[in-house]
Length: 65
Figure 1 (cartoon, rainbow, N blue to C red):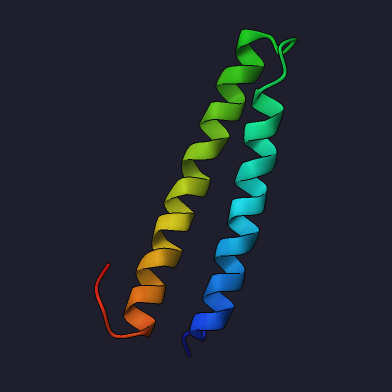
Figure 2: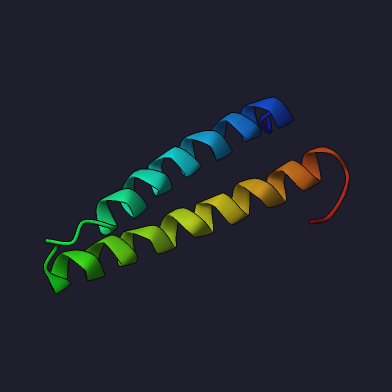
C-alpha cells in the first residue's frame, strides 16, 4: 500500500527540516574542513530521498514530475 499524497508531503517537510539543520550547521565559521565535508556529504542522500518523495507525489496525483 502506498502512502497518501498528504503523508508524502509530511515526509517532504521532515526531510527539508533535516536538510535545513545540516545546512545551518554548515554555516558555522569555526567548522574544520573535515566537518564541512561530512556535512556536505550528509546532504546528498537527503536530497536523493527528497527527490524520490517528490516523484512519489507526482505518481500519487497521476502526473510525472
